[in-house]
Length: 94
Image 1 (cartoon, helix red, strand yellow):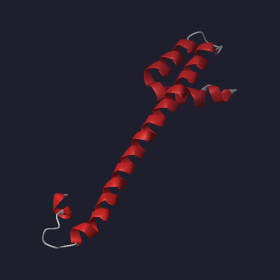
Image 2 (cartoon, rainbow, N blue to C red):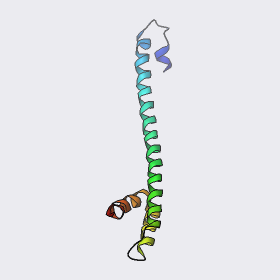
Image 3 (cartoon, rainbow, N blue to C red):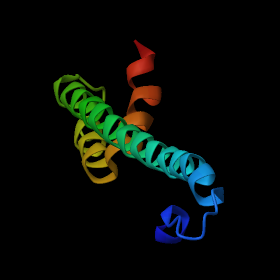
Image 4 (cartoon, one colour):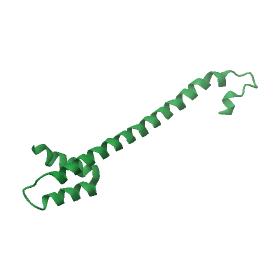
């Protein structure tokens, strides 16, 4: 980037292009930050959803005695996917 700022030859092209190049770089920094914030938000809400589904699976009364153990193991070992499956299969029944 030093060659764009160096104005020893009297060429103003470097100074003219500098705001555009910096703006382009800032655009990528902004996109990168938005991606990381989205990942963090999804992770936090996913973990909260996982904990709520795990608590519900532990507290729920089932018809068969092994269903509770099965659902708890599915939710624990498959994390958010197991919690989503539990939500749509069991929780939506009520």
